[in-house]
Length: 116
Figure 1: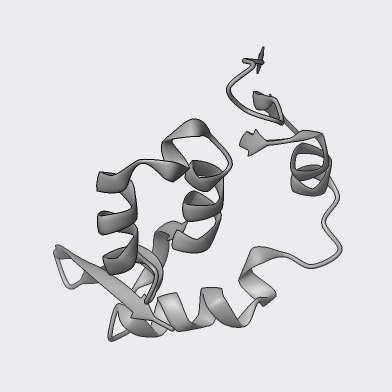
Figure 2: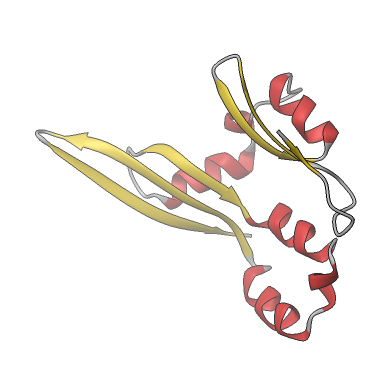
């Protein structure tokens, strides 16, 4: 499925292929999701997000903050005064991360935030 709107310069793609579910902003991002030059797990930002969980947690949720900021800034909302106020608090953040690990018969979870 592809979503296009005059409010965004690039389309938003949502699709499933090769065992992956992809939500991508722009054609290049959608193609890169299928055939990346580097995987997310190989990036330093991903490693920092894993470290933010503080232990042997398997990373199962990862949200990089910079692309979200760039997306909002590319729309009309980017010049909104309230957005600019909130953005100042989000800019120092690297990523939000969540994960889980098995501890005996219990499943433990953690949430972390990496800072630039």
